[in-house]
Image: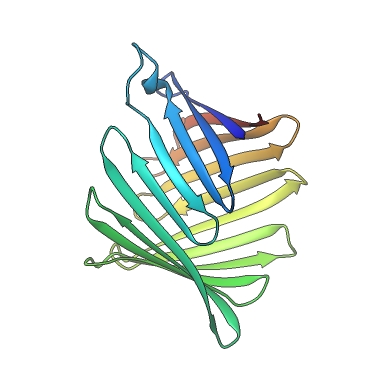
Length: 214
């Protein structure tokens, strides 16, 4: 059995939150149960409790217990001109939303992705280019908003990644620093700048994740 503990702190709101996930292997299927601090604060409750059945590369079924809402996700891969095209179909019963994601892997350095919400004009296109194995460029275009977003990330050290993303529609600039280690867990510090009214003090959040074998 595997366990995961995640903690998050929002400096702007001076609030902290935590979540615990337990995962069990049942053959080639994984069973997961997760809860947040809302599940235990002020006495045990169903708030923040979620259950899932997952078969990697095939399907995921999530159940939000307090909302009584199912979310289904199915994955498949087909070949287009000998290139793998990864498909993901997602459907949420609660908000009646169906989403399709497709990613064409051209080679190890280039891939093109598309995301579309059925029944809406919401469609996003993204191109990903990896340069030298340590720098990634991700321009994307939102057809509904008629706007471009840009992101770039770089491995600073073996376990450290620095990423910056800019949304032209909202003029938000997000800067993330993350690291992942088997010894000390995973850490991420984020700063969000809104450049619409000039450069001001950013909203800063920090989160960490620890994985355990039980």
